[in-house]
Length: 249
Image (cartoon, rainbow, N blue to C red; front, top):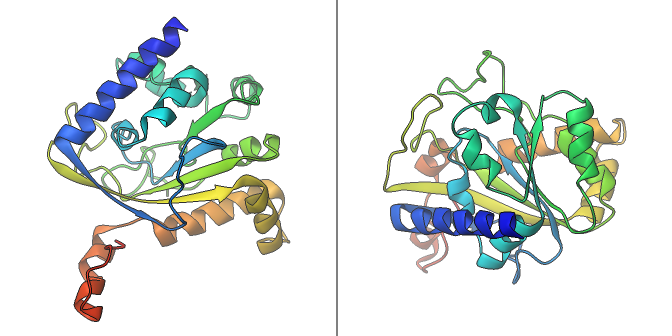
């Protein structure tokens, strides 16, 4: 309980910092849920660009942060945990899980912590996009199959997919301090896990489950993640209809 309380205090501090120094431009692809925490088992953040992505969680409802603090499971790269910032991530959720990015005993340990109360926070690409649009090894950013393993052990519940517009304007990997007073752009979608698994099987019948999930989340990332290019060419709907509506960038 002491660890949960410390984690909750840190999360609330991140939440306060985010609301003071950043603006969240958020749009829902699905209907916005009345209760973000109820039944939510996975939070998947696509388009991983910065270690400052906890700033997005700073806009989460308090009850969801409390769920993180009590039952959160966060796979964290061994490389990240060896840095000074690793101490921060160690207290960001109840169960920070160090992984090697291989399908080995460290990943088995993550799956063993996905119990009936767990909520898993995962970055499905497994590594950060650098300023050149590639990972640190110069490879294309791809979704990895680890999230399929988590979906596979969950019979029901909900998955919140966060489509990030990227945070390079806040902090590029390698920089120490973030730039303040920026807008963080995201889209969100709440999906039923059981329905999602059935849909993926129907849409990708030629693929095994892990490959189908990778293909589907890659498509969703490329289609739904907001980008500066999309924002530049999109005409506000109120200019078309003459009525004030929510901007869906």
